[in-house]
Image 1 (tube, helix red, strand yellow):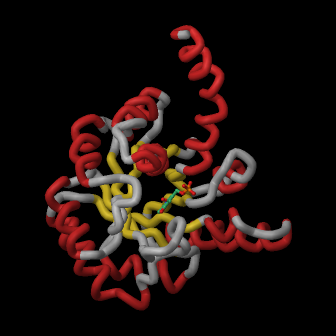
Image 2 (image 1 turned 120 degrees about the vertical axis):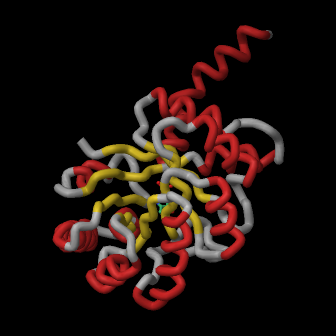
Length: 236
Ligand code: PXP
């Protein structure tokens, strides 16, 4: 069975709506672990719009499965990662104004920077993965950068406008998995996966872990709402 990494960024996004203390990402991490998530994923963005440095210190203490830190190659963020030492770091591209990560890291065009960052993280005992588009050029570059693991960007597949386009994206991902396995890379995938589209990706042989956030947090609001209302009514 494919493992599930649960991205809890948007628990922190809700907290930041009021800049308060709740809901706490650490509590969400504990619940996700209890629900057999294989890893807890968070993205410390340069603008700190959801997960904050303090969250990372707490998560490092409470996560007993695997803490996977999504991060850019910005020196400040790399420094924090080397201090906190999550089990894994996944390098992602980052643009300030984007609502979410918009594509894979262009490793081919930034090989030196990526290789240097990978080396720094590895020296600190951190396993490194690269979030890349399902393209041979990027997989070859990932191999050259010194990582043993990649995460294929499924965003294009998730946003496909029709069946034909989705089929094409699915084939791209499946071909990319085969190619990466030939190069002895461990392959994960994620972005934009939800309850309707995940099974088509989960069926691809060779993918070890899927990292999913937004759809799970959205669903939890809906399935948890009745209980939350009951608890409040009981207090009235
Ligand atoms: N994988 C990576 C590398 C990501 O950047 C994200 C978004 O933070 C995800 C997976 C999860 O994407 P989503 O929230 O759309 O499930």
